[in-house]
Amino acid sequence: MSKGPVLFLSARVGEGHRAAADAVRQRLVPRGMRGEVVDSYRYAASLFSKVVSDGYIGMVRTIPQVYGFIYDRAERATAAGGFRVWASEFTARNIRGLMERLRPSAVVCTHAFPCGVMSAYKRLYDPAIPVMGIVTDFVVHPFWIYRNIDAYAVATPEIQAALVGRGIDPDRIEVDGIPVDPRFGAVPTDRGALRDALGLPRDAAVVLVMGGGLGLGPVATTVRLLARTSGMREGTVSPVIPVVIVGKNRRLEHRVVEQARRDGADVRVLGFVENVFDWMYAADVLVTKPGGLTTSEALAARVPLVLLRPLPGQEERNARYLVSRGAALRAGGPGELVRAVDAVLGGGRVAERLRDSAAALAHPDSADRIAGRIAALAQPVLSA
Image 1 (cartoon, helix red, strand yellow):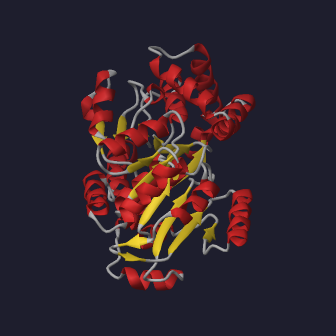
Image 2 (cartoon, helix red, strand yellow):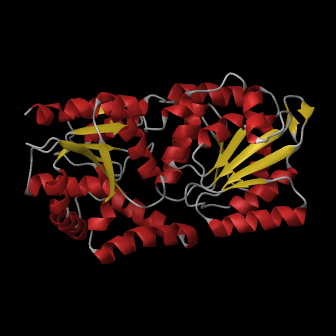
Image 3 (tube, one colour):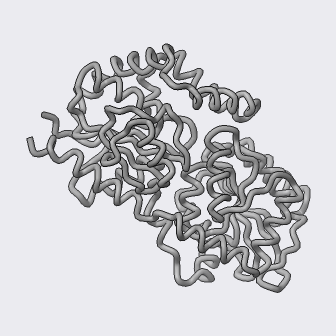
């Protein structure tokens, strides 16, 4: 039997799926286990991989309504389509070499595609290999759901109920939360000192703006709109300083910097940063698209959330869930964005209510909880 590392199968559609895998992998180390993170699309048919990964990014940037239509249509399907079955089985055949080389003690999927691949792999080659699916949104798409997957980690009781309704054994499902780096839950006691370290004025109203690892969404427009906010922070007028994290989108970085220069605005523009948690702690409010990982990190960091322009599909559903639970405000247009940010900064009950609701939903220990479950799942293999 295998006694190799835990294999994490992710997908290169944004940074969140990889971040979730890394968060859990790091929590395996204290348990004497190691993990390896692999992009599952590397083993898919080259045309399929390009269409799905590049096509997804292209659609959500240019024609998000088309992506939303495809997502909704697939969500209503009662059985796996022929192409989806073929893609999973084709990739399962391709991944056999990796499995034989690594001989993993368990496989963990942080995206729906590898979850389908491993379901096919178990059916075709090795039904005994332990497999867990970590659902990285606040909703679950049917593409995640397979009865021969051994364990699921999910974000909400509603997802748990949906899986049970689709025939998954309740004992295989735990509401562990979406795994985030534990540092997002270590709220600093001296926020002023943190601002000093980051070069931010202590008396400013700091608005953190994020567009995910790919820098998607109306980030540049959002920054310009923030100039219309009142700057009222806890009863006094303060300078508003947008801090923009553009991820790996260098074109967006240049556009925001140039716009700020023309406007004479004090805007801090960051690329891909490793200490996002520090910037969340330092901010008075976070304006972001509602990706599962970013919003889970924000919930753990207790930074008030304003959700802007969710993409159709999982992000739209994430937004609905977070707003329905009182953990975020949603801004549908420029006027709503300004009003929402002003409401959070104004020092009333809004920011406090958002933080309290975030605390009820947050799972800062999610990665550790999931790592413990993986260790238990792999134990029969490691003991053999």
